[in-house]
Length: 296
Image (cartoon, rainbow, N blue to C red; front, side, top):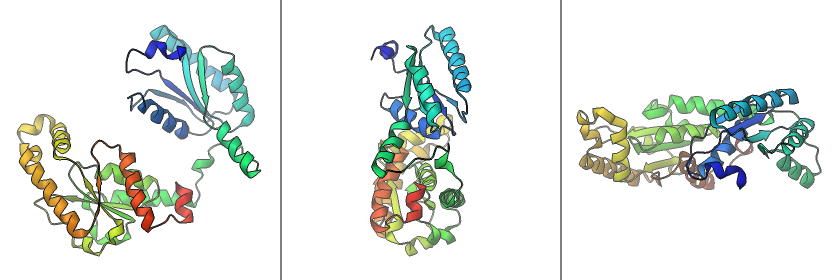
């Protein structure tokens, strides 16, 4: 497409501008997912949240266009917007269509319209409906608090309260995967495994359909641990020593077999992918209840 020719010869992407009459989280998530398809996992995103008037939008556009033109000589703008106020959304759509320097993507109107046509129901025009402080919101908050309190083997006496228990050696993505799952409303505990520490006895009492072992390859794990150590690698080299890593993984694999864990490989996978694989197995044994569906 002509508007992206300037970016075609490098891995850089244009700044993505998000305009929302809520907090803009939905548009930011879509922006990151789209940018990842071009090898950029942390795109530059500028957000205008809680919009109520077209004047706010126009001021934001004019200001950022001027900055881009001053810094790069190119004042064009890429805008992702989520405006549930239909009048405001249409006003901005008309405005953007009349300007050759704006590429605007409406992330809400078509989706709402499709549901309205299928159901015959009138949509709400209240911004921020996804983030209402209802029972689903409080369930997510409770899950996040539980997960933080049970990170890295803490409070093992409460493992039976977890929806999901993750096992894995150091740097196998236990904590980020736990936090991601907790944001979906699942209470998660994670247990670190290493050759010098006995795992908690409470693991033997956990339903096997709730128990997941995170596994990776020695090569990937050595690289991650070396980067983690940085300049300290010469002092604490055993942590990333290939022989130690191989033994660490083999001992973990043996324990996972003994416990009957479902083993999930995390190498070359984003946290989101690992979490979805876990949920694919978990939900077969524990179909989502109405409140979990609402929290997704």
